[in-house]
Image 1 (cartoon, rainbow over the protein chains, first blue to last red):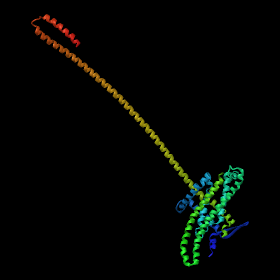
Image 2: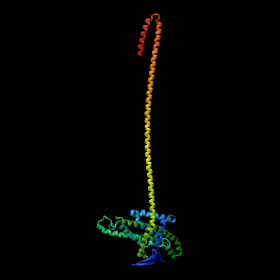
Image 3: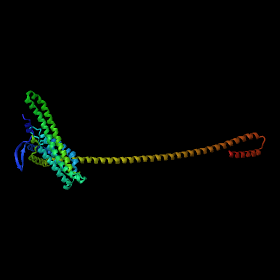
Image 4: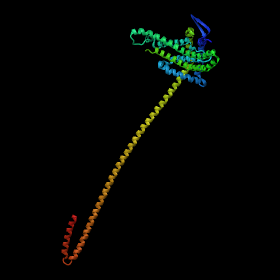
Length: 254
Length: 168
């Protein structure tokens, strides 16, 4: 019984088939990539269906999605983007629903948590970084954007120190985004797996003790899994709102 | 387990491609129609609210107009009433003055009538008394005084009475 092997099996990504090779990087179809595609397909099908239905389950899904949509529009984006909200809305809605669904997909049997992979969260944070640059340049113009990376009204010797710090800050924010989502998603799984592994660890020592540990361990693992539903929603929300704040800072000169 | 923190650039690339493609596809097939429906509904609701507000403003205006009109009518009614009162007062004053005058006239006439009657009665009485006096005097003097003297004396007497009666 190798605990590390169990964790690796459940948490790490597994290659399925190599698709292509560009330079030193292999583009492999992995388990997590497959999950992302499945999540993407589910989102496209269910949301397109919901957007067009007027009755039944589609209507109920649509009502729920509309509530989240209006919340993201009015409470997260409106204070940051004001009249430009409409242009950025699809990006943030997709970001929230993609992360949320990926988080939940890990709780489905045979599913895997793509957002529990640092490359996936890194990719999403890189998208945030690119959006910061894109939106900053688009809304302010290139020169104004570069000028306003550091706060204005600061004497130039300070600016020499401040400019690299601000640029570094952009990267740090995105790295923090990467690690926050990754760590939050993987920690729940680690804890739940640890509880379940307790059964086998005690079972290896003596069978009756193993049976006695089983019930509380399963209850606790279930509790952690339920907690993961909440954490999944919360982290999707946090990733979305932080992205909005960072992009908002790039858009409005300070 | 150190593989957990090892970034896989291939997967990162795939993530970015997948995510951006999803942004595009969902934007076209899901968010577009959803947002369109929401905005149309919000527009509809806003219009309805504005319509209701306009209707309420109209109703308020009508109410204010009516109230103003009512107040005007009230003032007018009060004015008319005051005029009527004034006219009635004037009429009453005129009537009472007339009545008084009539009463005074009547009283004066009555007084005059009474005065005349009194004078007439006094005259009559005076003549009666004179006749009685004469009769008495005649009876008394029949034997002593002849007719001529009597006549002279009596005439004198009557003249005196006439003079005295004028004073009375």
